[in-house]
Structures are given as structure tokens and as C-alpha cells.
Image (cartoon, rainbow, N blue to C red; front, side, top):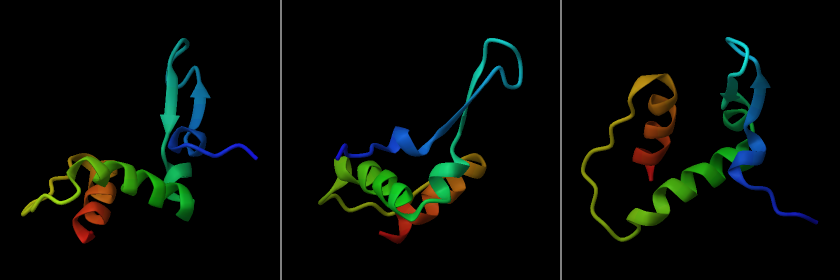
Length: 72
């Protein structure tokens, strides 16, 4: 059995919004509990053991990730 990576949970839509663009749709990552948890854990890993007072999540996707990161 092959282990999934965060990238495996992200859908790619070719030629959106224009030809030649590969759009990465992270809603499929956010909709999967295991994938979302994996992403949060990987984002937190480099800062393990540090005291963080504030987390900033810019724009809509950052707001979702930032809230989950701040929770930990």
C-alpha cells in the first residue's frame, strides 16, 4: 500500500481559468479529515517546541489553515 501525501489530496484542474494553467483545488484537501490533518501536522512540524503567540492566515485558504494551526 502506497502512503498518501498532501499533494494526493489536492485536485488539479487543467486549463483553468485559462489554457495552459494548472489550477490546484485545495477544497478536496479540506474536505478530507486525514488529508487536512496531515497538512496541518506538516505545517506545524518545523515549529515544534517553539512558543508562538500569533498566527496569521491571509486570504480564504490561509484563514482556514491558520485557525487550525492556531488551535494547536
